Image (cartoon, rainbow, N blue to C red; front, side):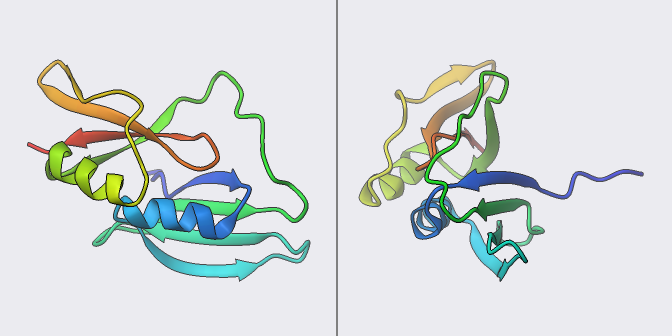
Length: 122
């Protein structure tokens, strides 16, 4: 059976992006330079695979995200605790948490403008 193994984002600043995803609970797993001098950074959540590939290309500081892409989603133990921790890292939600069906959710935006949906577990 096919398996979705990772998502790739093109980023403008490696350190800034790695710090953002580390604050969300991701771990940097590996980093390597490609022949064209681009750098790939693979990140994953504890106990899971390297699900997020961040690609930095020399000389590019930003990308047009387009209108078709929306977000990735991760679960968190509690939104209140997670948002408190993120706030200490300078990361604020786009708007306060709200219910969708029985799920409590909110969105944060990474340094390159990619949205991340936080879904309270349980």
